Image (cartoon, rainbow, N blue to C red; front, side, top):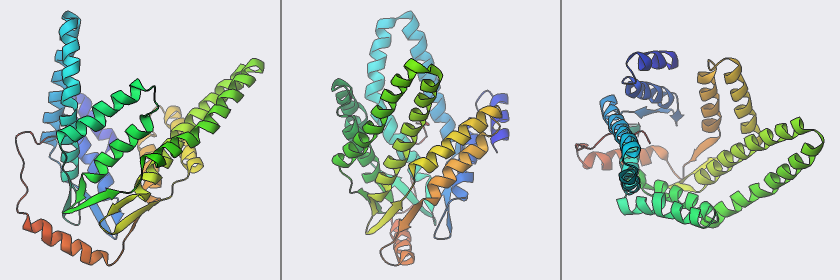
Length: 307
């Protein structure tokens, strides 16, 4: 799948990339199972292609205008910031609506203003406070996505607080500061070791953030009375990331498909759905309620922006 996607995307000057995305996601979805049922990815590649054409045209026009008329380019940048919340909502809505389990589609429904606060105003506040508000920004974005998502007619919920995210990010500071101090001290004696320590600390920090935020997100996510449990480990995930990176570099990129599978397999196999009651009755109820809503509808702007 990976080789064919790359070759056809190159031969078609990127046009096939939309079909490549659908093939790749259908493979991952189809091989991910919950309670014996596989997930489904139902997107239309043509709609994905439309979204990508819009994005490419925008950035092409933006690049030309920025070069020729820098002042107008600045206004376009502001305009894009105002337009971003709409893009976020449309893309999340598209991906949710085209994901399904047991013939019940997921959903995403949010106001543009809520997206503007989560992805424009709060990040701006985080930058203005020199990063002090960034854990709250991250929490607010996750809360926005989770609480506006649904499975059939049932909405997801998030019980985590901003304080939980502050504790998480602050718990990374101690080993990170310790690593930086150690790297600086050793750097005076033997610089190559200092560089190696820096690389190890970078990989550890990235793995720590992925693992801890993933565990916190799922362990505090609810679906009606049901819950989830995630138990990824930082060291285990760090080893996977390190070996994937080395193998991909040493094979000039040919290991990439195995790297993607290894990382995804680890994440999925350390994630559990924790039902409170009979899951079959819950799914049956969802199917009945979803069917009562009538046929799915789409409008002229129903396409994926690839965000």
